[in-house]
Image (cartoon, rainbow, N blue to C red; front, side, top):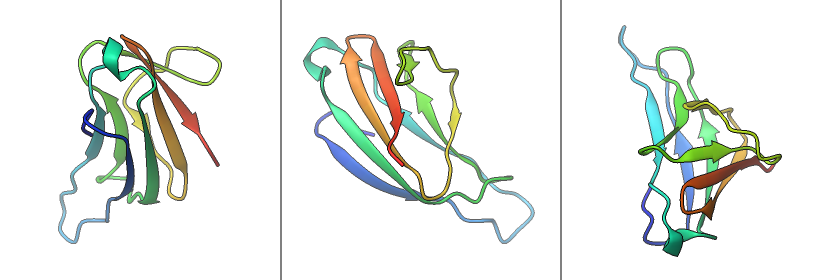
Length: 100
């Protein structure tokens, strides 16, 4: 993801046709003061899972919080059909919300 503008991202992984799959990590950029209030929406169109999982990961040492303010361990597994909102809440923290 890029911090330069707000984004909605449709994302999917597919099951590999060969024996090896590869994971896809959607990396959240580093937070900073000018980015407070910046948000992303991730719409998970398909997540093959298994050898080809899609996850949400952090860049650097920022903290990812849930809706109650609890710290989440990353990477976060995603679920097909879910919409995730990621909001920069401080210069070192992002908040992850599942919208549906």
